[in-house]
Image (spheres, rainbow, N blue to C red):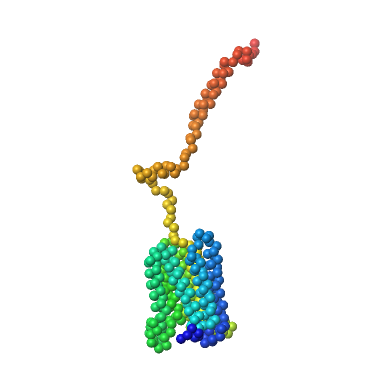
Length: 306
């Protein structure tokens, strides 16, 4: 087995070894490139102080997924098959660690152990073989053994992880929960279409050419990855809600003085209306006394009729 050996996995290629034997499968990888570029732009639009390494790393991995898949659907050999699968596997592991640690608050040590366990499960599912008889593991000697669900079993642990993490986040009221749950629903549809590519090969025909459903896996999978990027870029851990009212201070705790100091100073009270009336009455009395002490000549004479 060499890296240059051709592999024939999908309906559109059939047994054709030409470079452009899968034009629709190749072109549909543009969805990955679009998702990665838009996700990268969204990350760069965030303020620098709010930007973390994963905001850049995850969109770059989506771009690598698109480029690796494009190379495979052009050359379809063992070497480009690795270029197709490795970026997908790396994205799954990086995003799982990100979601566990950043969204769910799992400690780093436990996050690493969970990611290692997930890696082992994914590796085992990738080796599951099906045939007309029993289901076997690790390349057992079953006659006519082939990857189950056209190799889509490898993606089932990722789908399960998305559902579980999305439900946990939904229970906690995390803003990332809708992104993950929608991504899981779309990913479930895309995995189904990937699995049915060969089974529906004769039914999905475009312009007299057998196409299959693998191109739909590309488009829907790119949409699911974009939703995951939005979850990582636009949201973060759930912040602890601040109390609406400050707690009451206990006597003797010293908190009463702090509350009193923090309270705004009250303006001096305005004089009461009664006080205002009293002051005005005193002023009127003084004016009358001053008028009574004036000289007689200045007093006006009163005339009465005879």
